[in-house]
Length: 142
Image (tube, rainbow, N blue to C red; front, top):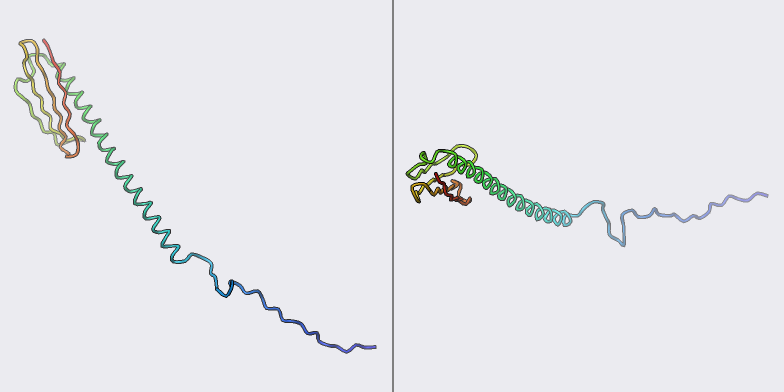
């Protein structure tokens, strides 16, 4: 007995809709709003970092200037304590130093307290505007 060939009725199955969710199409990647928000956050972070770098650089300049000023002050005190008492300058000495790493004005004043005791005052004034001056006063005897 032969069975006649009958094509079966198959339901056509549609492929699953790719990228569709509840009627909306989704795409891989970032939206313009997400990029704008991330760029704004990045700009805020970089601005804060730049400000921090500027403050650190300014503080470093001040520390470096203080180091040069202290070294210069020590050098002048040592020089004035080692020269003979009679060779101390009798009039104020004002010297402008424009070369080197620390441009400054140096003022040295020797005041005779007694014939055997002198008071020596050294003032170092940096030529850069935001740096403070430094002064040391000591006595020297015969």
